[in-house]
Length: 189
Image (cartoon, rainbow, N blue to C red):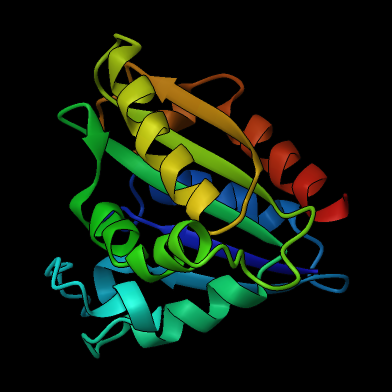
């Protein structure tokens, strides 16, 4: 199986990064091919809403998204991880999602879901300092739109709230294990 992981955190060793590392440990590399993108390290420009992809289904902006587009097409499973900032996904995560407009056009305008995308599944991993559920819900709505646009019809969400301290997720009793198990289950089904 091909598993695609997006780490939308700007901070190495932070809460989101630690959860992504737990997910990576849960995936059997002998049985699965993993592609990992640390979005903060990639030069990805924002969507210009130019309409260039509406007819062609190809983004006219040439940057590091050119590595991501084929990875999304080939993926059987997609893991999307982001910190929650101001009740939303990180800018790094959102910029990548916005640049997936060609997939939206392909699926909803041209009625052409990603070829071979039957039974694709996803996992959304969120962590943030705010204790109120609204942040996770807002992120979840955006992530759901992304997943559906790239023909992931089913995904699970793991959200950890009230974790504000750097690496504070280590103090959350079950988070690391839950993410490990969720990635393990995702990669074996």
